[in-house]
Amino acid sequence: MRNVVEVNNIQKVYGKKGDSLSRALNGISFDIADGEFVGIMGPSGSGKTTLLNVISTLDRATDGIVEVAGKNITKMNATQLADFRAKTLGFIFQDFNLLENLSVYENIALPLSLQGQSAKQIRAKVLKVAKTLDIEAIIEKYPSQVSGGQKQRAAAARALVHEPAIILADEPTGALDSKNAKSMLEAMQELNEKQDVSILMVTHDAYSASYCKRILFIRDGQLFTEIHRTDSRQQFYKQILDILAELGASQDME
Ligand SMILES: Nc1ncnc2c1ncn2[C@@H]1O[C@H](COP(=O)(O)OP(=O)(O)OP(=O)(O)O)[C@@H](O)[C@H]1O
Ligand SMILES: [Mg+2]
Image 1 (cartoon, rainbow, N blue to C red):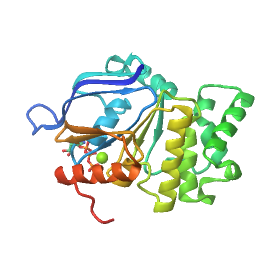
Image 2: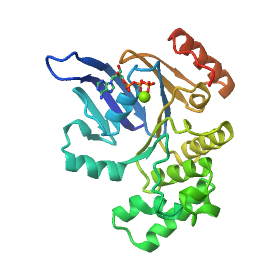
Image 3: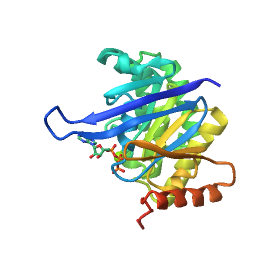
Image 4: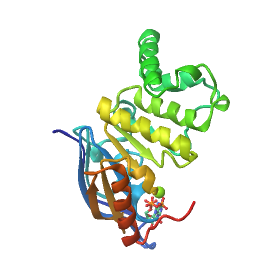
């Protein structure tokens, strides 16, 4: 199976020469096969966000090679990166990032409008993805008029509408209550299982992580271990908690 992401010996050092340097990533390598649902976990400050930002082209690695959808992103210039991001990647952030003065429909349509697709093409694609995420009924509303869970599913629809090679999610359930978090995770699971969408998700939450099929644990900017889901989600959840305890990153009661 083709790899959608290949990360090769990535280093990321923050700070200029002479200042105190902070080594956020210290030689991380892994692949993500097409159609995988992979989680990244690890203690606070271990490098999770840095790693996601490097893969999502929002930040540059100091050393190493990252390939996404067969393209070496570490070699691209700013214009190429912007174009690559718009076509190949889908983002879901913790705080939704919907534009308040656009309707849900217009928000979802945005990546296609930016590509200059026709209104007719756009309509068909937006309605299809809205159906998948069960937000057809609220599509003409504005973000301020819908619930947190609906907002996050609208953000997921926007991340998906241009059929990206991979969805990159940073704490996608972080701002949701447990009921909405569950429906968001179920929607992501369905996208992954029924539509073969590849997903990479950073989360500090073991419950959210239990929806992944594979989890990479990082510590001090290095790969600590990885686990695959072979059993039930409940079993996987327990296994995740054990590793977090070993990592000294036990779940605080939130
Ligand atoms: N812009 C920056 N400048 C300097 N150091 C940074 C910068 N961003 C992150 N770091 C450092 O790099 C390391 C990794 O940070 P990162 O944000 O990737 O951690 P994280 O695993 O996402 O943590 P959290 O769970 O708290 O979100 C930390 O030591 C952090 O202080
Ligand atoms: Mg982080």
